[in-house]
Image 1 (cartoon, one colour):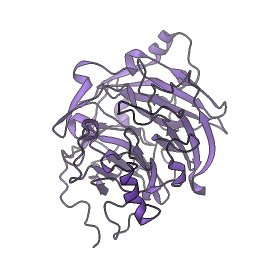
Image 2: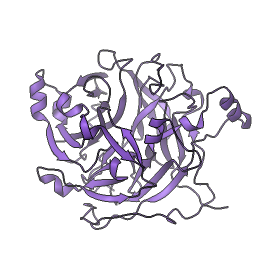
Image 3: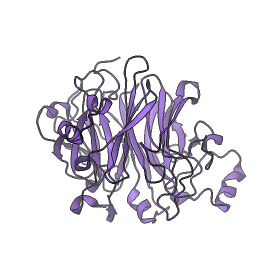
Image 4: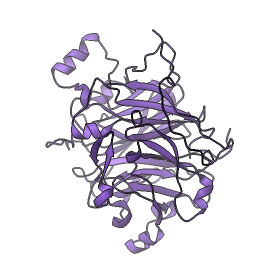
Amino acid sequence: MGRMPSTIGLIFVTLVASLLGGPCRGQDPAPEEVYAWKSIDYNWLAPEDRQIAIDNGNYIPENNALIGVKVWGSYAYVNVARWLPGVPSTLNIVPSFPMEELPLSTPLSPFPSWEMQKEGNCSAIQYIQGMEIDSRGRMWALDVGRRYFFTSNPDNSCPPKLLLLDLDKGGILLHTFVFPEDVVSYDKSFLNDLVVHEGIGTDWYAYITDAKGTSGAIVVYSLSQDKAWRIEDEKSMKAEEGNASEATIGGRMAKLTANIDGIALTPKDEDNPQVFYSPLGSFHLYSIPTSVLQNPPSDPMEIRSSITDWGNRTSQGDGMMMDSFGNLYFGLLGEDGFAKWPAEARTNSTLSEAVVTKDPVRLQWVDGFGFDNAKRELWLVSNRLQNIQAKDVNLKEINYRLFRIHTATKSYQYNRYSS
């Protein structure tokens, strides 16, 4: 039986507020549901491998949470968190141009291979939490190293590292950088998300959020120097207390105590580039110039004085991403939806968001974003993480979804009018 059209049964609330900010201003179209899973499953090497993995505890379906998506060529690259045991593969692919005969719940294929997913082998991939694909087709994959830290016995046996993979050559490993422990703690860190800043030659940077520690931090990695450093600011990077520390999502109260989480970068051709960020437990949105991140002053107060507080969103958010026109997309956890801050509104001193879509069923906990630059589409994940947090995932309901929406723009890594 072929796939049912993904628009059937979708109920969306779409508000018009000059949303697009790109070449075709006006109302954003409703997101198209591309994939939907009750539980995440995989393309196993042999039919019996699945049952063997279940029997020995290496595959526990309810512990597999889809958290992010990026698109390159014919594939959507998706990552599955290893917060809990029983996750056989953390970095995976599914077709980005799904054929009609593919089911909505297409199994994931481990990438680059099953062998590279081996837990406990610190030369392999342990847990990909964040990833980005640059304009050259290189994936910058953030391997947390730590696993199972949603349990009382986290595994800290492998260090955190940044991997560069060549996607046009099947995921060949180009470079590995292991973070030194004085920059990223090996037992208390949570490297969460990243953006990639294109430079000249090898002068590229990755800006990475670390949601753990006393106040969280932005970790900066320089490819040309093959070196990393850490920048902290308690006022803007630490999770807030009170109302910001929780939200009702899908009727369930979720704890939002993580520090700096989502991160976005202004477009390639924008003057005075800025990194935007927010703690998970915060309504505020902040930004800091990349010039400060690349050459941080020794005085913490100088760092603080360079940070802009853009004001409050209507709800806390997890992932965020900016497009080539400077429109910022971010989730609204307490609103079961996601919003856009149009580029032209950024000339004002305070945040003014426009809700793109709400759906109390399908958009519970909007998480990662990614662009299909060839088709000028924004992809996003919703994953009901409030249920993972409560360790109460109902496998009879759809829990994980991939959507795409035509924005007529590319990601922040491209010029505004690039072909």
